[in-house]
Structures are given as structure tokens and as C-alpha cells.
Image 1: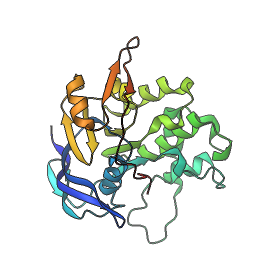
Image 2 (image 1 turned 90 degrees about the horizontal axis):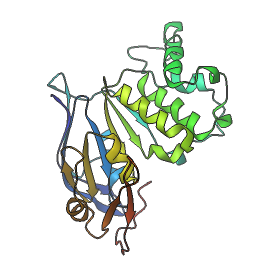
Image 3 (image 1 turned 30 degrees about the vertical axis):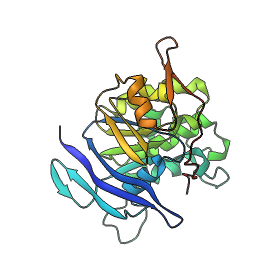
Image 4 (image 1 turned 60 degrees about the horizontal axis):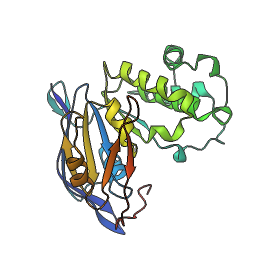
Length: 262
């Protein structure tokens, strides 16, 4: 399987905290479904922002590939945390999904009729075709999540990145949402960040824990010992609950209470 992103010895942070990520290395492959877990302040969101180009590395490399060849960038779809969405902004569902298209090579940045016709098939796939003229402020969390997922995939990306998608979800939509991700993953690689270890383990193919450094595990058959080592000062326990394991954070005093949503 070809890589699409290769991260080598990455160090990154912000002006007031320069060591959020330390010596992180990671490879994301075609059609991968990588789950990223880790304690609050451990650097999960910083890693995503660095991959997306929102944060510049202090040192290290991020290399992108297309069909096994190095390229300057790849097409990445992004579903941010819900607290980054302004639901009061006067924009319709149709306009949100359409905005995911990149206007390549157009002198006048205007969507064509052909562009606009791409919206309905995506909306139907997401199950929001009856909401196209609704304002986003009228949507439930689960509906908004699926609209933003449609925006993330309309431009045929090689990879989509989802940052805490469960923060949107009324539980009614959660199962259907992950079924959608399974379908999308047949063609597109996915990186999913979540604090919910149980959800991650039940859905993804491979797993990584970010706690300043990065611990990678091929597959999801992880042990209590691996989790304890990866979380370091945040020991964690997995409890079974039906077919879906859930996580319980044990008592801890975490030193990294840095706000990741910078």
C-alpha cells in the first residue's frame, strides 16, 4: 500500500508553547483508517493543524505522495470540531457543501452550473438532500455533521481528517455516521481524532496515541499496557460494553493542560 503522508521527526507548537509535539513520526497510507487518541493538551489538534498547513513545523518534514510519487501537496478534506462552526452565519446547506470544491485554474472564482450539479449526489449520499435550502443554523448536530462531511468529500480528496466528530452527534445519528465513514473509506483514507477510545477501537484499522510524542500501533488489538505507556501520566482502562469497548480515565494529575483549540 502506498503512503500518502509521511511525517518525519516533527516538532511543532505555538509562540507561548513551542514543544506541543516532539519528534513525531507517522505514515498514513492509501485507504488507511487511522484513529488518533491522546489526553487533552497532548497535541492531537496541533498535529492535524500541522498536516493541514495551519501550523508550521519548527523542525522535521511532512512529505505528501500521489500514486507513490512525491508531490507538494495533496487534496485533503476536513471536518473541524463543532465549536469552530458559526451556526449563525447565513449560509445554506447547498452552499456549504458546494464550498468544498476547489476552484482550480479559474480566473474569476465563481462556481459553474456543472459545479453546482455535484452537490445533490453528495447530499443524497449524506442523507441531507431534503435540507439543501435550509440555513445551517436550523440543523441538528447530527445533520450539520453530515453536511460538513459532504463538504469534505465533494472534491474527491485523497484523505479526510475528522476532529472529534462525536462532538456533533445526537446518538441517534452516530451509528449511521460511522457506516458512512466505512463506505467512504473504500476509496478515501481517513484520519479520525477522538477522546473516545472505545469508538476509535471499534471503527479504525490502525491507532496512534499523541501525548507530545507519538505511539503507533498497527491494528486495534491494543493492550492495557500499550495504552498506559502511550498515555504516560494519564493511565487509561478499557471496559467492555456489549460489542463496543468504552474507556475510563483513571485518577490522574495531567501536567499538560494546554488548550489545543488554538
